[in-house]
Amino acid sequence: MDGRYKETSELFFYAFIDPFINAHWDLYAIDYDEDMDSYEYLPNILIINEIEFLVSPKAAKFSKYWMDELSACSNNYQHIMKKGYRSL
Image 1 (cartoon, one colour):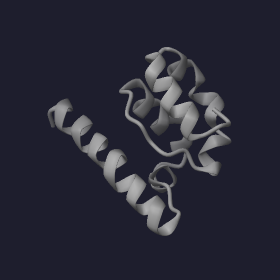
Image 2 (image 1 turned 90 degrees about the vertical axis):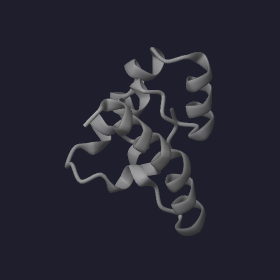
Image 3 (image 1 turned 30 degrees about the vertical axis):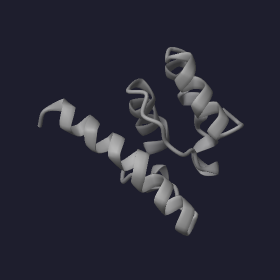
């Protein structure tokens, strides 16, 4: 699969579906990855691509694994992500 389509689908999912399920059911998409160590790796991929996502309290406990990637992102993205979850 072309990487553009994967990135586009991730962008759509986290821009529209994630806020929707959070607003209606207080769920976070980041909590529903099928990998056992998803909090260590999935956020890194999203951050490297500067895809905004909601950080659940569960996921925030693993934020130490993402700090290097987040610090390498644009200031605007860092601000958005830190504003969205105060423990980052």
